[in-house]
Image (cartoon, rainbow, N blue to C red):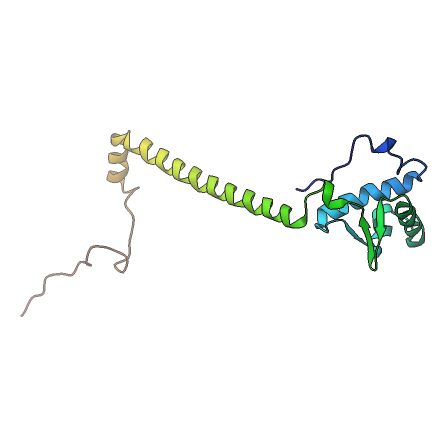
Length: 161
């Protein structure tokens, strides 16, 4: 899961002073949106009102206030968080980290599965009397069809007669 970085002293930064608290809320929600959707800091205009639960015109006014404060940059289809990639991982970096994590987990799962199987084999081998009883009762005898057997199927002796 990617994380958006917010400086813990942002509330004292000159860019935030004098901003409507709703604009600061939009800024924070937009960071969350960008990280969740791996947009590298791009916010489509159509998303603005969804991020702040305001009318599109109110959300646009708040976005323009963020542009005037230097926190966002205005674009053709939306807005760009200023210096987003200087403070946050890019979509490519996040996808690479996710792929590496998935591969590491897969490898760990395979290793764990092999160790679990070996532990079960060792446990069975340490109790020969239990194995003998299981074989005698037919529990461990696999029923195979003649097509899957390594032994040729039984056929009665041929008699001429």
